[in-house]
Length: 130
Image (cartoon, rainbow, N blue to C red; front, side):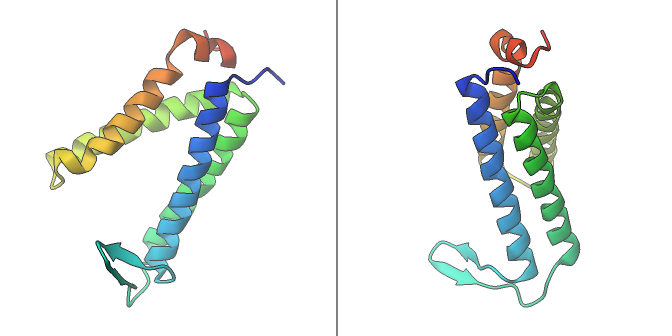
């Protein structure tokens, strides 16, 4: 096992947090956890099983990614680069569609920073991909 730099550990922790958020969204779509808009909370009257399954799949992908990043596996680095590029593309498509730039800005900044950090020479050296 290679020595894990602090930044790689931070990426793994952030991916674990993303897995928890994805699982929470799955619970919301099943109607088991509340949605909130400001101070108002409400439950879905019917379950969206397909949406919930997609969020569970995303949570499983993030859990796999955490394991790969924690072990400093080059597959984890490559997948993180690909998923952050995909998220940036999806945010751009959302802006072209019906979402506002302000709504997509956190996703753009977060995924942009992850992509920049992944492409730094030190990070590539840590994963042995330089």
